[in-house]
Length: 213
Image 1 (tube, rainbow, N blue to C red):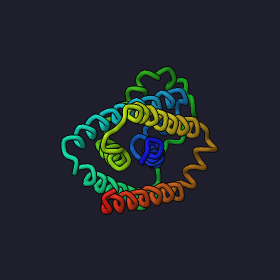
Image 2 (cartoon, rainbow, N blue to C red):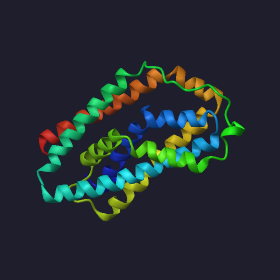
Image 3 (cartoon, rainbow, N blue to C red):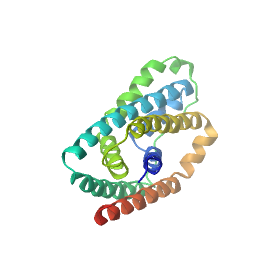
Image 4 (tube, rainbow, N blue to C red):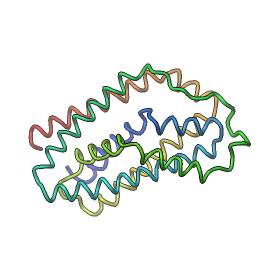
């Protein structure tokens, strides 16, 4: 798998994972409905947290693969299996309502707290142990045994852009009444699509590991 395919695979899997609702989504959503600026600051914090995870996962996995060559296929299979499990969880929880307070955006009482909400977004991202497992699983599935420097530099940058970009979209959308109502109305279908894509990707990776690729 060349560098471009590896990067595209990681970007696609991370985009699906970022779009699946979880603690980070709820935090940004609840911040955005009261202040668009604070919502964007929280999105930047999510991107910074993703950058931390990406660098940590890259360093740890590369060292492990070099020390134990057979570990590559084992972790790749485990990573695929976890993606199947995560896809199932997303699908099963599609009909669970997302509690988002319906308040007027850009409340003067909530504005001007960008620094605090950035740190809160960062803390929310890095304090979620499931995020670390997802990163390690996806990286193990798509990265080659020996990660070239260009890929090691590109992956964290792409992760930062995906995390920040997605949550910025969430902040901009949910700070407006109409997009917020539309998302909540079609949440079940959106979650099922994300869960299905994640599950199929996991199955493909498990099969690849079984074949020894």
